[in-house]
Length: 170
Image (cartoon, rainbow, N blue to C red; front, side, top):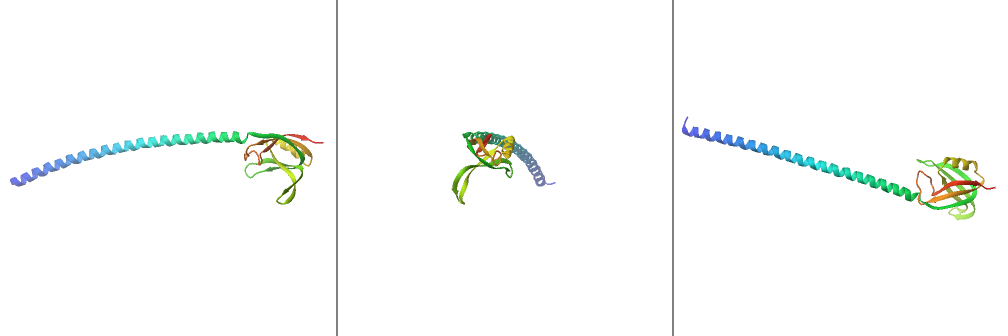
């Protein structure tokens, strides 16, 4: 072989070895970068999951606290009293929550959109035994003791007036 060719082969081998070493270094560097990125992403995912978990738990307890607070506010007794009149209607009403509802004709006349109408008072009954007693007294004159709540809650009744005691008038 000619000296030029030998020198060319030697330089070619040196370059090839140098390229091979650089290729190995680049591969190691890429692998290290992948591992670094993977660990960074994993820690970010863990932090995000932890944050979301805390956020949803916080919102859940805030909602629960607000719901309980509203329930106590809504069921606060605003007024108490009695009403006397003729019991004209008792029924179970509601699409989702069936509640016990009644009407008492207090007497007198009031004007409405339809003209003159009787003075009707709508009320709700929470307990079934009171509902049954009122059903048996339908059409008779009764005195009803009631409590008025601040707000209406759908599963309790359609009105804010809740009867808790009944007396039949003679």
